[in-house]
Image 1 (cartoon, protein in one colour):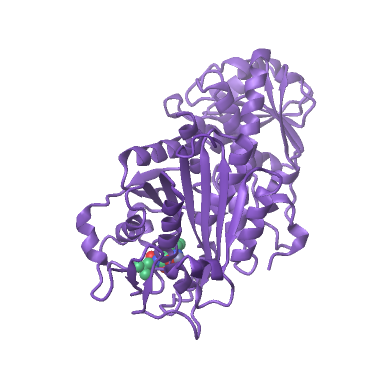
Image 2: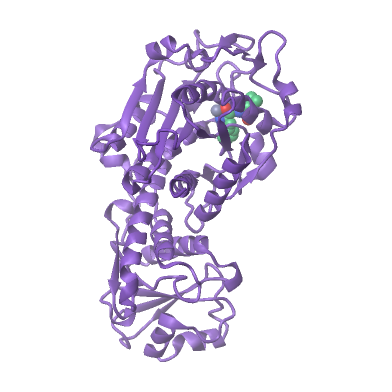
Length: 518
Ligand code: BES
Ligand code: MN
Ligand code: ZN
């Protein structure tokens, strides 16, 4: 169960808690900080802007390192220079930005992530940075500042809640220093937005990293409650008996095998109450542990199935930033939360369940439980009058075969909505690629004994899983994101840290912001 000692608001245990991000107008060489951060593009021999003035102040060390080839400006390259009292800050960190043609807001995020970890390893407490991308990079001031905030917070993220000896976080303060006074307000706005977005992502990472005995359906309810407290967001939680009244037979069939009670969590944000149809639903798979049920999974790697609630984590935690950023659109998050366990009362392969909309489903494999819980969650969303639905799920192992761990799979019945989702992903630095949902695939999940069966066989596993969910969206614009391979990462790099990635929280937030602007 949830230990109340960390009912820390939003339970963000990443480094965020004691790291302060701010903006200051002034000359970066005159800051009272442990280090300052400047940058160079790949292949540039004469740096411009703030880097140029720092170079002059430290007697051309940067240009001479460029001459000898020690500083090349490669993306991710970090060179630490000790200033020997030539300027106030004791150290200058030169960060490579990579080639100018490839530079975008996501480069800023990953560079910022690398920087914060590098300086933390040097036990540095305070540093100031130039606004990467603000000058030559040609990125809008607020966007550049937002990307620095996102990359810094997320790059510093660590999940150490269950470690007796916590790894120390040294960094206390990060300041963006800007010469041009007129840019300060935009930088501040960007940082605030970035902090908000990054805390949502950190929260999602925490939820996914948390073991299943700390992250049950009720724990998801506690977190949703925490987010809604003190805001106008309306929270509704359905328990088992309410689900029975609503005839959510597909979800209940999965829940039967576990002694832990299932929950359906509904969070409603009304940013455009006068136009109820200006809405979007974010629906997440919340399997807090997926053993496979009676179609039990092999034990090797089963522990990773604590993360099978990453879809629910992403829709719930996105609501945190949405309530803070207040876009003019109505957003409903729905999380379908239960364990999938074997047991004396568990559903069996071959069982037939009746979904909320009356569709009968043959449960051919109890390990294809995500589409079952989502069918009822999507039906409920349609009944609520949602005009657009994005569902997020760690749905299929097959998506890793198709797209690897680089790209999230998208599936849709609506070209406009899916392109809006993919565009939001591009902005967010979360890669998404669309796979087809041609009618011919429907044959694969037709059942001999019921309307549908929950598995489609060996072929096109991610597509049939997605299309099964799509059946319940009816004619509502719908996109499904399969994050089974992207919700976790085996390695730390840039703004991504080992373990949960928090994908696709940023995409969802950017999508909602973009849709709210018409
Ligand atoms: N939760 C799994 C999918 C998964 C696999 C997530 C690997 C994260 C990493 C899902 O419920 C599942 O078991 N899917 C089955 C479907 C099959 C039985 C049709 C799968 O992918 O094997
Ligand atoms: Mn499963
Ligand atoms: Zn699952």
